[in-house]
Amino acid sequence: MADTQKKRTKKLLLWAGGIASFIVVGLVCYTFLFVNELTETAKEIHKPIERVFSEKREDPVAFQEKDPFSVLVLGVDERQGDKGRSDTMIVLTVNPTLQSTKMVSIPRDTYAEIVGMGFEDKLNHAYAFGGIEMSLATVEHFLDIPIDYVVQVNMESFKEIIDAIGGVTVVNEFEFSVNKHSFPKGELSLNGEQALAFVRMRMDDPRGDFGRQDRQKLVIQGILQKGAKLSSLLKYKSIFEAIGNNVRTNMTFEEMVEVQKNYRGAAKSVEQIKFEKGEGKWMDGIWYYMMDPGELEHVKSELNDHLEMK
Image: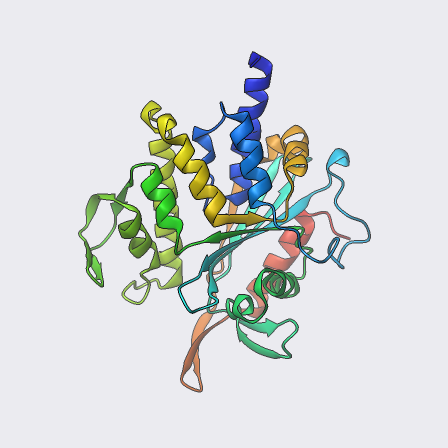
């Protein structure tokens, strides 16, 4: 393989991981030398959706013209006998002209209209009602922006990915226990099952979903650190298999190539937007997160501006 092709492949993989953000960004660091395996994995994870492009756009995104675009990342908790819910919902907007990416995580208990159902419920229930497409439509309506691409990751099998790289190391901020797992404060080495329990806990976290989101970031940082070690390269076959088993996206391999060519500068600056002013509310014995209307409108405006929507 020529040096230029190796460099191009490495950049492509790093950017493709950025699109998947909190879930697969640490995994693709291992695989830049394996073009054939990457291509086959990209084909395997591709899952088309029914619509051609968002109704909030007049025309599809043109990567060759460097149009800003958006991605919804769904971390889906699918268990045996249960269709599952999207416990992780992250939206990224990518603007190549500004060379920046904005990222917002939506609390899973957010009270919102479920598009296609005619009622309001927890936003993450949209996946249980109508899968990827209803989740996409609901988040698009909630934020009032076009959602161009979606990446789904099976969180129940996410432990396969962690085990494939030999586990991760994290620094835990406070001691807690989940079922049979205990997590003391300080540096911890976690296998796949432990890492999944670590990121799932929220009931005993004083920050609820917000603390849970921070632990997800810790696990991803642990994946990145492990990816820097040469020994992890020897595990690439099991890593590819884990990605193929657990990740689905409507972005094609050819579109990933176009993103790499025209958008890689936007990956250098990632700004996190947080929902912090809302509050919890009990309704009919169920707890919901109620957005602060002013904060929600501000986030909508910021994302629309970043996407250059008029």
